[in-house]
Length: 288
Image 1 (cartoon, rainbow, N blue to C red):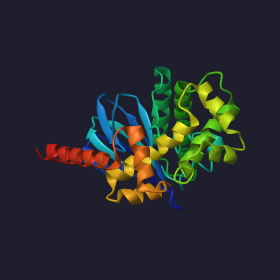
Image 2: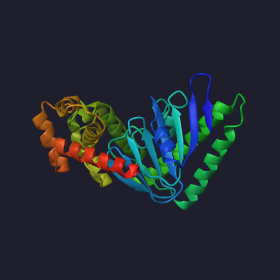
Image 3: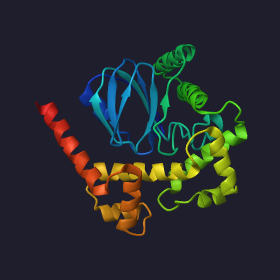
């Protein structure tokens, strides 16, 4: 099912079953976002050089920047749209998913809704599908409304599993904004102080807030995002490692190599070699 508006708006829903077709569909276009809802158990995807297994009724949010390889796919529902259809940055006050589902730090958002919420999500998706056949002057607005509802529900479910119940809205918004800023500036800003200045907060305030969450520190968010981009580029490009280091804001190759080895236990060149060997083996296995 696909919707194409008069001004470049695009929204589509696909049933993913064929691995070849699914691989093509999961390569999102420029300024596009996606939501994958797994409808069976035992689905294995390699995302940004890391392997994940997803079961029935788990959802993940993806962007055009994710590199996705299908290892094994049983079935999933895939929803994707472009910025012209609905921009979550321009409408963050409506859905509040910036820095949580999209444009956050390094972790892949995995949503596991409760059973009662699954029924609500299924109803919203069904209503969304019905609107594809409307073809009247209200179709675009109705489709956008259903998408917003879906994003709000997913954001609530993700926050419910991740957040401290005592955390207030101001604290939640501060964490979201921190994650968003890391996503935007991780290549040139590597210190908590830099983001504290952007948020007009002290580094200690940020550290205390993240500690209250019981999760990783603000500095670890920065390091994880840099490592994600390093792994992506090493695994999916042939750029020289020195060029990758410079693009990620490191003064020289040695500093980058020490950073990468400290956090992964291996050097950038060893990581690249491992990924290349794994890709060759995976390709050979498919051919056999």
